[in-house]
Amino acid sequence: MGRRRRSSSASRSNSLLSIAPPMRLSGPVGKITSNLYSYASMNGVLDAVEKDFHLVEKDLIGTKEWLNSNGWTTTQKLEMVNKFMSKAGSLTPFTKELLPYFVEQKMLKHLPEIKDLFFKLVKEKRGEIDVFVTSADPLDAATLKQLEGLIIKQIGSSAASKVNFHTDVDKDLVAGLRIRYKSTLIDNTVTRKVSATKDTWAKAYQEAMAL
Image (cartoon, rainbow, N blue to C red; front, side, top):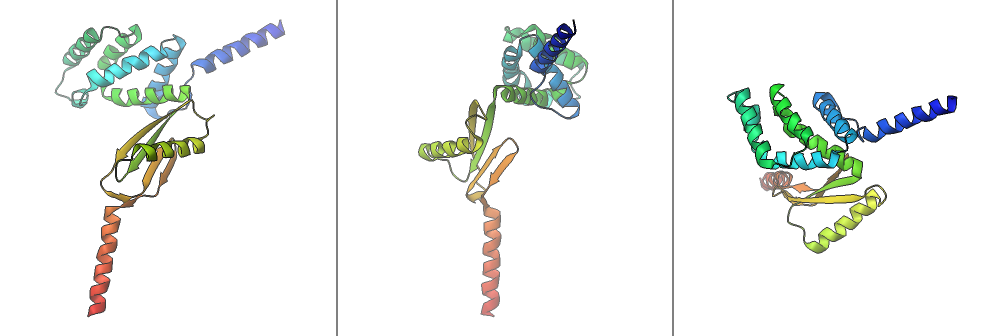
């Protein structure tokens, strides 16, 4: 009997762990997102809700102004949400209940952050890692491939099932790279502002010496 109880308790613990978010999120919005994740996971619709949120990102959130606008009444926002859901067609029942609830509880303004955090949790569960690379000029294919290899080696092939690379160009940079993933930041960039300041100091020094 005791063994059966222990086995049942262990089974419940494993079940709870399987639906729990893979990482802890802080704050009210983090708590809401964690609850949404657990509920979707428990009902086996995690991937489907992720697809729903991609549609929400693309066709509903838009420029975000209307989400926060006091000029929109609850009725108008509900009409906007219902129009989106009717057009989307293939949304899960979970999302169809969630969006009107957000409107009624005046939580719609948090939707962009909730969506981003939900994506973050799903990627964490899959072992996906986003790597953001910023450079002064666009990286050519050969350089990017070499860089990807170095970063994957540093992360460790067993640490991630998939590494997503995102590149960006910052015209304020003179040289170097800024690489960010998870809580790691590697920054060996030189900004034009710093370079310009050095030039100013050098010029001032030369003028002073010429006096």
